[in-house]
Length: 250
Image (cartoon, rainbow, N blue to C red; front, side, top):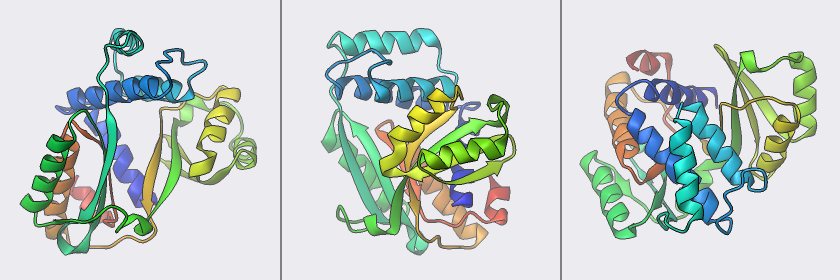
């Protein structure tokens, strides 16, 4: 689990500073739109937890407030795009499993793009449900240590009572894992404690990871980047073991 979270956090922090900033913004704005549309055009974050979470994530990548406000106004006014969720499962080279979650306004385009990426990098697209057993859905909450004022032991006890399953500390970050069904409870608890969350999302975390050599990993990392570069892709999950050698390449 640690290697998987480290990959996600590296991508999150690095991406917000480089050429992918625009794509991160696009994905965040889409998340806001979907949160409103799927909750009867409710643009009030106080009564729409999904929107509240989407706004927090958008702020976590420094999306300007004006952009957030415009997206909310557009979606609540009925002018926002109508999106649907679609996911893809398949294998990349060396037997690495991929689970790709998308949000799209054109399913045919998305299917064609995802199939093309699998083919380009020597992978194979599978049928829905064929790889789901390899992953477990967990809530993952990333918090900057500086945002925590209470004693860590006391905080962990509070969070365990609210459904936290495990914790990790990486550099200046504190990461909380919960069962998928406890995601809402954990979000509420952190709000009650007055702790600002940098990022909160549901991730598919592999039950077991698979290790490959550094050279083979380079091609797989390019495949991951290709998925993430697609505007319709919201999340990419995999079971590649991120060894120190691979992380050094990043």
